[in-house]
Length: 391
Image 1 (cartoon, rainbow, N blue to C red):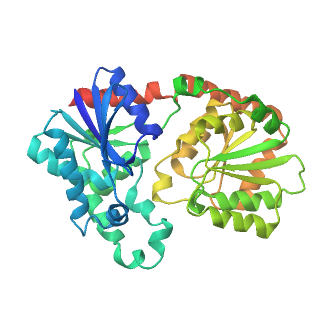
Image 2 (tube, rainbow, N blue to C red):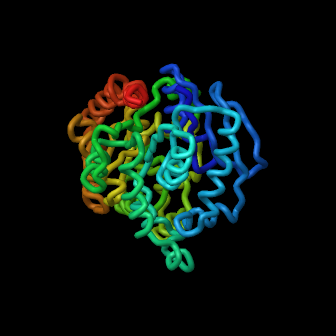
Image 3 (cartoon, rainbow, N blue to C red):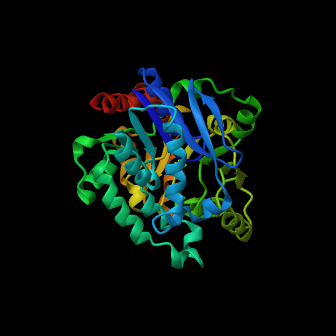
C-alpha cells in the first residue's frame, strides 16, 4: 500500500514514528510524510519516501490548541495535504495523534482514503498538566471539555486505531465504544537494531560506574515524578556513593533546579536535553532505571519507551504503580513497583536493590533477555502488519 503519514511537529526525530515507518517499509509498503518546519516549505527524502515539510508560523503554533474554535488551523493542514494529493495518490492516510483526526476525516470524505489514527498519548487527559494551560489567558480560552468531546466523537469513526497498551485499548472500548476489531496495540518497545548501532562513550560509562547511579531519562515535567526523585535524593544524602541523574528537559526544568537549590543537594545532576545516543552511555553505566510517573488516565494506560531502553542496557527498573508499567514489571520480576508520588516507598525500593546486588543482577539479566526475545520493535511491528493487512 501507499501510505501518507501526517505528524503535527518537526520530523525527524520521533522514535516511535521512525520505528513505524521502518517496519512498514520492511513489510513492503511505501511511506511519505507531511510534517511541520520553522524553515521555508520544502521537500526532503526519508527512508526512500518523500518528506513534505510545511512552514509553520509562531501564530499557527499558538492557536493550535484552539483548533476546535478557530477553523484556520484545520484549514492550514487540509490545504497543505491537498497540495500533496494533487500530485500523488495514496491508499491510506495515517494520522499521528488526536488533533489532526478532523483533518483526516475531511480528507477521507473527499479522496476515499482509509484513515488510520495513531494515538501516542491520551491528549485531552495529558493537556490537564500542560503548564501553559494552567495560567492566563490559556486557562480561560482553551476548553478541555471540548477536546474530550472531540476525542469521543472522532475515535469510533476512523477506519483503524493504533494505541500503545492493552489498557489503552480497554479504555477506548469502554469509554468511547470503539469497535475492538478496529484497534491494534503497537507498544513502545525497544528498537534492538537501532540501539545496537549506537557508539558508546566509554569515558562516560567509566565515570558513571564509579558511583551507584540511578538514572531517569526523558521529559522532566513534574507529572513524571521528577520532584519525587529530588526529594528521595535528599533522603539518601548519607549514602556517599548514590548519585541520581535526571537526563532531559521540559518547560518545568526551573522548578527542579529551584528544588535542588533549596535542598542544597549535590547528589543529583540535571543534565538538560541529551540525545538518546549520548544518554545511552549513561544508562550503560548506571545501576537502576526509574519511571516514577504520577497516576492519571494517560500514565495509567501507557508506558514510555524509556522503560524498555533501561531493560535493553540490563538495568532493573523501579516504576510507579501506573497499571500498564506495573503489569510488565510485576509479571516478569524485572524490578520493583512503588506507590506513585510516595517518596518513602520509592526510597525503600531503591534501598532494597542497592543492598541486594545479586537480586539486582538477576533482574537486569532477565529484563535484557525479555527485550531481546519479546519487548522489541520486531514484535511490536507485527501489529502494524496485521492492521494494514486488514485494510
